Length: 100
Image (cartoon, rainbow, N blue to C red; front, side, top):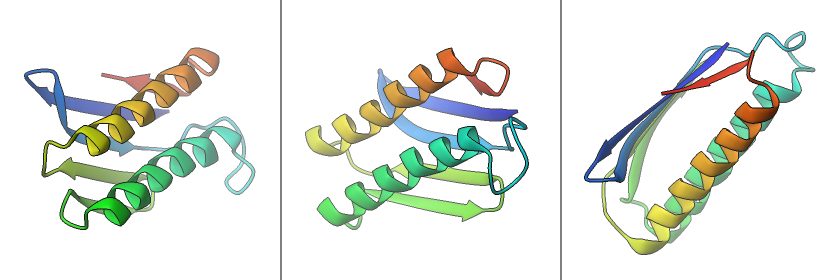
């Protein structure tokens, strides 16, 4: 199961941690893991393209941690969009994704 932790301060997302593998299918053909990874990496790349210091992140097999360093309307919108997409994916694959 993929476990996603979202930390907020005054309703502003400050940190997102994604751990684990979905177990939906074998590695390399797991559409749930691929979807989560794509959403996260696309969001990270967009934030960094807008402002290189807006976020910092750590990435390794089965683990991603994203810290939001700056409050900015566009960065916040990108992060919120990612969370909304992850929640939608969770609604379709509740046995494979948990969001806290």
